Amino acid sequence: MARYTGPVCRLCRREGSKLFLKGDRCYTGKCAIERGRPIPGQHGQGRKKVTEYGTQLREKQKARRIYGLMEKQFGLYFKKADRQKGVTGENLLTLLERRLDNVVYRLGFANSRAEARQLVRHNHFTLNGHKANIPSILVKVGDVISVKEKSRESEKIKQIKELAATRLLPAWLSSDAEQMVGNVVAMPVRDQIDVSVQEHLIVELYSR
Image 1: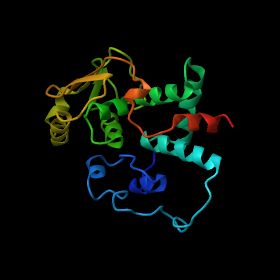
Image 2: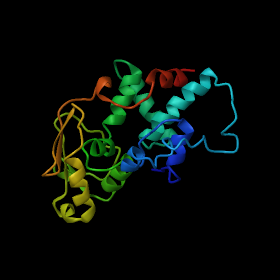
Image 3: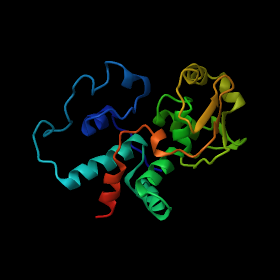
């Protein structure tokens, strides 16, 4: 699956808000948003009237970039959310939160979603005791995510282990940071998803 490989701080600058794409750096004064860096591009400083479509587009782009998805992949998630019962926007965020790479990040087993995706790709995790190297796998209640035994000796995983012990978990997950094992105890609901996205605008955009 294709992925964005350019400078990620540029994406935060474009959206005008922190997307927390670089892990710990986003919490320091080195963050481009904290430093007041302008919107990238030749016309970033210009004042333009923002249309209704433009506002909707920015929300979609923000959500897509937070979860590290390309356009086609994000559109497929929306179609799936639209077919489910309930509120489409909330269904969409729930689906995105259930991705294995996002769950690894939420458990504190990675500094960022991009790093979580890479670790999953490199076969460092198991799902219910089985190999799981596809970041887009959707977890369900009762699933167990753990770091492989042989991966726990790597310096990278040891550093992550210290991070996991301090990570505040969402209510729908539980974790044993010492054993590097996480559990899905419930499906995420909107109140438990701390992303600054107005999902109803995304729904309006796709409904045009």
